Length: 325
Image (cartoon, rainbow, N blue to C red; front, top):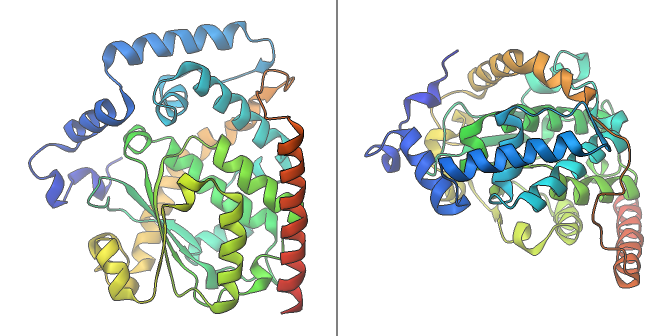
């Protein structure tokens, strides 16, 4: 299957084929070359085979490389992300199992444009994930719908090796966002999913652009920022206008509604073709199991426990304030 971004169209990539650019970035930023890749994959497979805690783990190149790349080929760190990834999915199986884009609620959210992916890569060769919060009715949909539609999107993107290297750009249109979008979650579950998600999903989030952020949701932005690492927080940018957004993100990759040329509806249909192509593979993810979490390295000192409890208490208070406001 061939998609539009494969043709490459950005000025930065004109002088090199896209594959050459991916290889260059992989070597420069991830310390990846053929020898390193082959040795790491062999050692990773041997470790999985000997690890009695992991059951039915995928060992194809594509799957293992996402963990190696996100940790710049540090095998011990890649192993930890894999364990945390399986544990995240298993712990929140009610949110992250049975990732079927044909589920009625999920398909509706995808079709109406709550979350979709541009068929064009940005000037840095990254896939661009687009969000429209006004397409998510918090009185109709639940937190499980939000979690699944996000995870389906991310799983399909993580399955692309070029994107494992180049990373992702996020563009969120928060128009008509309200406190109700936050309070569909319990504070504890929300905090855990966001924090664990950042540590467990092998994705290179390079930029996050937000536009049309309502005043009440600025408070929610502060809540989310408090959960994320400083590295992730530094990649967020709030834009006050489409003109500002278009300076930060090449409008060619955006829908017509945000200054681009291709209508959102057309982008959505192209994205759904990608989802269809990966449906069977994504559904098979549920076969992987973690029989014990004893190999996961966590910070268990008292200071960390105290700070985590304080954070949850703070967020619970923030959620109550959102409900009152």
